[in-house]
Length: 204
Ligand SMILES: Cc1cc2nc3c(=O)[nH]c(=O)nc-3n(C[C@H](O)[C@H](O)[C@H](O)COP(=O)(O)O)c2cc1C
Image 1 (tube, rainbow, N blue to C red):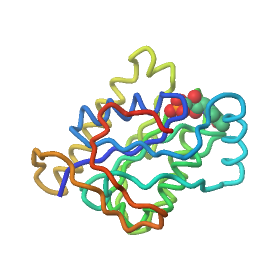
Image 2 (cartoon, rainbow, N blue to C red):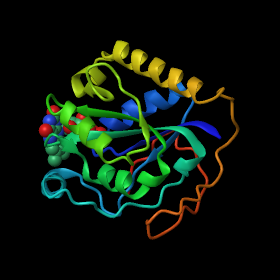
Image 3 (tube, rainbow, N blue to C red):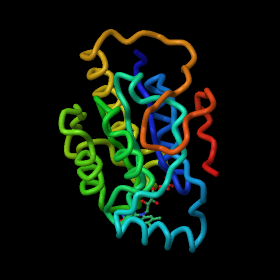
């Protein structure tokens, strides 16, 4: 079993940046949640607002990594109107049965982190373990903290918590390249490629 997978959605790059930092620190595989259509610009913003206010679960591409192969899966989202972003809602709902040990993180401009992280935690299967982390049920960093390289103490503390939980789950081993994902999720198509997304390629 592999150690950690970091899964994230990012509309404008902030959550991607945090996901990449976490993946580097944890030597984890990285999975970007992708949609067929981008959400850039004013129209993309309005569509995102519309989707999140209706708790819509947009169609997402099949993942490249099978979350069942990991001891720990960290899932990250931007905060949208104090809610989890719609693509991450889709992922959590579709793959809930494959996510046994979970951590959450989010990025935001200023408010709504607690509600968002709590909402993410509520989308898990009841028997799944989650990482509690201080005041929040996960790691929350603002764009300002990310931009200035601030928040590194919070990041360090979170990474340490995750490591402890992975140690408790079994001795971490260095691993080779990731194998093809084989999720039997409700996603319409299956993963077709093997790739560790360390560069966090943009969706599209
Ligand atoms: C539709 C929408 C709603 C948002 N609502 C909030 C909010 O309620 N609180 C907040 O602090 N930031 C809010 N933001 C800002 C994002 O959370 C913030 O810019 C985040 O870091 C973006 O992450 P990303 O670059 O990975 O997409 C919102 C952004 C969008 C697109």
